[in-house]
Image (cartoon, rainbow, N blue to C red; front, side, top):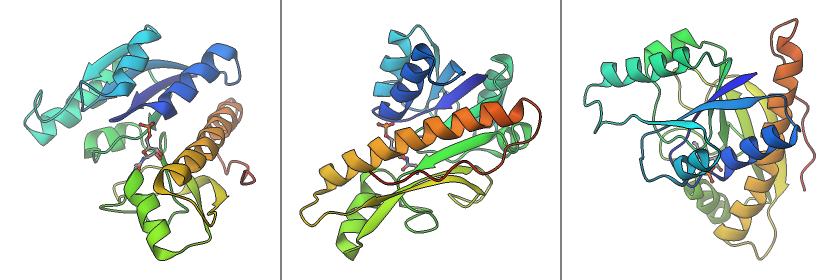
Length: 207
Ligand code: GAR
């Protein structure tokens, strides 16, 4: 199974997918990494694995439609089966959503629908969870639709919040659980799309 990955940041999620592809834990390989940030750790990690990378942003394509078209064409040319948003902090355009409808997944560091939508991403989610005094959080993998963080959920994992958790310790634990969940979702997706459409991934136990 060929994957196209969009990522904006450090790229630890991408790294887990790259490593799992190399080790054979998942039967999937990353064909292309697209980033809106040419300095992203994700871009460096992709290059170290010899994966093609593309910088597509408002700097390279000022017009929303042109940017959407460039992303769509790159993913189509790479013949990807599944598109993964791995810490991609930009909204996708209508063309890519339509072309890959039902085949774009996003990983989000909360138990959606909690802490989803505009303004909730990365560490901000963990800050909000700690500020609210929640005793549990987690991660969600969902299919991407036009509505932010609102598409059908394909997998979710719960992570307990510990008494002395900091944003950093919580983020580390959620990311760890999130990576396992994501690999499980990709693996299940591969199995299920061999002969039928995707369905719910197993819900993983918290760590
Ligand atoms: C991940 O925790 C991912 O769920 C989150 O950003 C982190 C990326 O980390 N994504 C979002 O918040 C999207 N709304 P990484 O750059 O180390 O892979």
